[in-house]
Length: 99
Image (cartoon, rainbow, N blue to C red; front, top):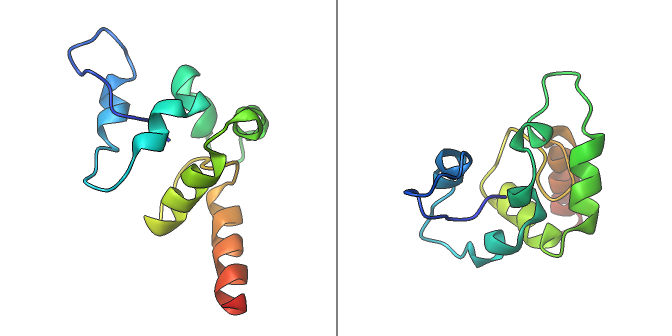
C-alpha cells in the first residue's frame, strides 16, 4: 500500500511507509493513491466504515498489484486493493478452489 520514502523527510507517514520495505518488488507502491491520503481511512476501527478507503482504491492504477501483495503476504489488517481482510480471505478461498 505505501511505498518507500525518504525517512529523513518531514512526512508524518514515513514511519508507516517504512513498515513495508521488502526485498521483493514494491515499485508499484510509489504510484498508490493511498500514499497521498489519510492512512487512518485504510485502517478503520472494528465496525468502522471502509467506504472512503474503497473509493480511493477504485481510482487507483495499482489496485491489482496492491491486492496481490496483500494476499501474497497474508496481510490481516486494513484495506488493500479495495478489499477488507474478510473480503481478501473470501477472494483467496474462492480462487484457490478454482485452481
